[in-house]
Amino acid sequence: MKVYHGILVDKSLINQNVISNLKVIGKKKSGSWTLIKIEIEEKHLDKVIKLLQKYMSDDKFYFHIYGNDDLIAVFKDKVLKFDPQNPRAADDAQFEHFVSAKDWFAFNTVYGTSEEKAFVRMLDRQMQKLQTQYEQIYLLRNEGHFAIYNYADGQAFQPDFVLFLRENSGELLIY
Image 1 (cartoon, rainbow, N blue to C red):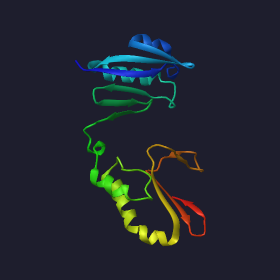
Image 2: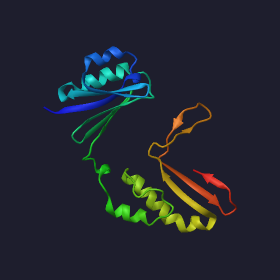
Image 3: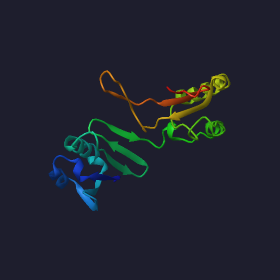
Image 4: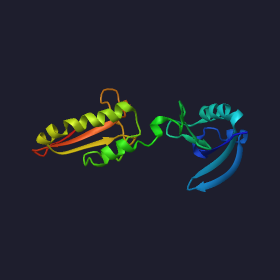
């Protein structure tokens, strides 16, 4: 029988009574929050996830559930299951070597799609031309670090990459 564990924050639940429906194996006070560690049998996993989503207070919180190599992030409106066997999670030594020599790239690899890696390689091919117009060039892979907000409707957008350029005149451009 496979067993999962989860970490909940008491303030993230709109109804604290839902905790009584779970197998609690530990609690820890952290400031005004109480962290609750739960245990879930695999056969009850989907049911517990739906229950937690139903009583989650808002989209500012999420829960982690883990078992062996599995990691699940539970949000109010979605569930993300991270698969350690996914090729995107695998190390890419050739790409890491490629980007490690690039002073304009802010990370030592990209855990992303082949298209995202192709974008970085394409930008590298354009770098000599760009360096004639810009004194500083930096590419940042946005791993959920920040969002850009649309002025028209206030909707958030998280770009995969952000390109920072400083023109030879000193003006900073961000794309």
